[in-house]
Image 1 (cartoon, protein in one colour):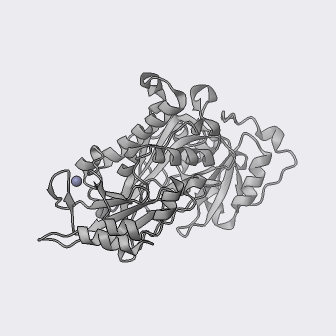
Image 2 (tube, protein in one colour):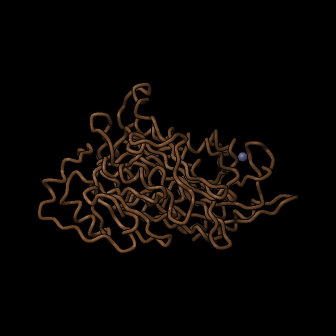
Image 3 (cartoon, helix red, strand yellow):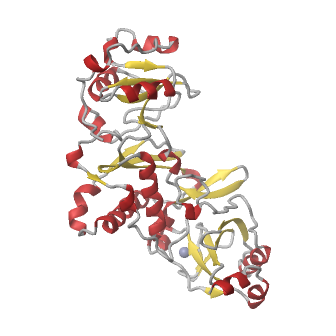
Length: 413
Ligand SMILES: [Zn+2]
């Protein structure tokens, strides 16, 4: 648990331990460096095995080429800094080991050209709002007393083409990375703010609606790029708007913290977070074992223009045209756990909030199968800011009669 950096372990722990030889392709990188500073491993599994035997040392990875070949380094935080600061071209990652405590962090990304409707600052601010709501529910404290924990660091490696940020909350800590992911999944189900994180992603000739938050980073022994580093072959280092020093680097590392200085949230506390009944459904197209069981049965036809309910698809198509425009279903997501269908609509952009078509932003129609109503939501920033949803309208009578699940619902009432 205690992650206080130390370099006092080398002498004792390493007696009788012979680390593998440095890879040929890594030798030139480490020429002239004292071998006492760190241990090198050609594979992650060898490095993890050694790391388990050598408490007090941390695991880092380094790109050796642009195809994803990496080697691994085991060093104390202070020795790693010595290596890192001298390296002119930095391509390093922190390995967030499976059972090591870690800070709350988010990895956000999307392609700018497909998401001109997204306001970057709103997205970043929404992360803070989401975390604040979660902490309020877990800790049952006044908002003012939570402020010290809500400080976040925003690391940026965006380019003209791609928005890419890491958001780190250095004072909120979880027992391990899996539980961090569980916390974030819970937050997303809790709040209407979640709809702010929906972005469009090209997939062949289709547009997919996905989360701007990458949920795959909360997996076992994840390599997470560190401040000042770029992937090998890309000149897109993570920056923070000020020059780097040891303290700043450490503050941005996911596993580095002083236990007295943080709030530790355990797995049981996360269950205090209550999902909203009427929250906007997130298209969890990113299949992930991190999601609670409730969502395991989600059937997201993210690339499909038709749902498992053709009659309802036909009805939706019948309401998305007027004299000027004929819309179509861009894609539809079915959430079997909550019995909702989310239709992303193209061309037809009539928004009930403004009483006319949006110029460029798309609308979304949501069908609730358990109540047999539908309503409209919107990707326009202003409509999303107030989380606009149109008054619900009933699905037509003939659908109620034909709908195959209807009798099941009635039986369960
Ligand atoms: Zn709107």
